[in-house]
Length: 248
Image 1 (cartoon, rainbow, N blue to C red):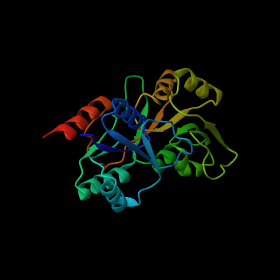
Image 2 (cartoon, one colour; image 1 turned 180 degrees about the vertical axis):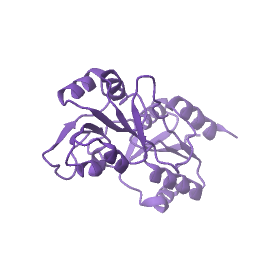
Image 3 (tube, one colour; image 1 turned 120 degrees about the vertical axis):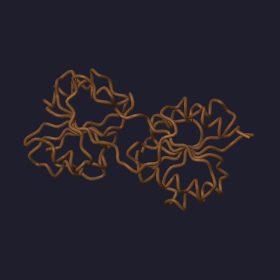
Image 4 (cartoon, rainbow, N blue to C red; image 1 turned 45 degrees about the vertical axis):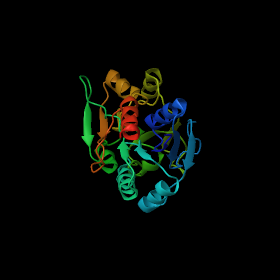
């Protein structure tokens, strides 16, 4: 029987998953996006923009829309959303699957300093650092409190509030090429990269560029407390979906 699948998340994996389900044609797929990006990358199936209103709101939506399966493919740093999603699915009596891509792993030639938070990352910057900061437009606050440092921030869209003139802003959308990353490091005389351990191939070129340039990386670890991942990639998640929907 055709099923209704709700996919949470604006990640590359969420988009690929929705496209696969839509192309297959046996089930209906809706992708829920938080609406933080004004022009999200197009995807197949139906798109729901905006919040459901917390755990209770999502539970009510699952019941009202006859959702048969909830797939949480949100960003690895969206811990609160994942926790709420699992609770909502349990409350509604619907199966819950979490797709989380693996984090990056330090390799030979890397010079990582691992930190637990954005605040710690900003505090770890050396005095007068020239930092390439790739943590998202909504999380630049701790770095704005380092007036001694030069911050080159890359975001998909402009921050909601004006940035100080000393902050240099690069607007771009992944995937990023290695050549582009090397040009940025050289043009802005970057001496340290700051990033969250988001994982994935679309933004990994900056780590290769830092390695080739011999630059240190301040790596922000993923938050704890999220539900465990059921799948690490789209292919394995699709297999789990089939198992859930077609098991007796």
